[in-house]
Structure formats: C-alpha cells, structure tokens
Length: 88
Image (cartoon, rainbow, N blue to C red; front, side, top):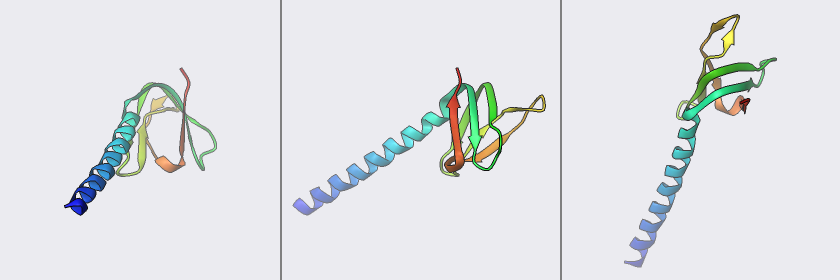
C-alpha cells in the first residue's frame, strides 16, 4: 500500500514538472513587440518589429517574420542557437 502511494506521488510530481515546463514554453508563443533575434552562425541579427515570435518546442525551433530587403520574410531558427532580445 505504502509503495503504491509512493509511486503515485512520484508520478504526480514528475507530471507536474512536465506541465510546468510545457506551460513555460508556451509563453514563447506570446512574445509580441520589437525584437533583435541573433541566430548562431548568422553574422547580423534579424529585426522583428511590431510582430510576434512563435515557438514550436516539440519541433525545436522559433518562427518569426523579420523585414529583409523591405519584405517580411519567414525565418525558422533552432531554439538552442537563438537569442532573443526585447527592444521595446
């Protein structure tokens, strides 16, 4: 009986952490405003102005639309290689 309670407690604890991690990652999808996005290996930052940055944590990348050569362009960057700096 005690063993079952202990296992149940451990399962709830682990699933609680997983829920927290997933919830924390969903905040990435809510980023809106002006950002400077640095991607490792790319010499200059991407500028995201008055727009949002969306994440796909399960797939491991960010999606955003910086202005490149006067046009909004889709960019996908690996989460591990991306640094986002809020500018506003």
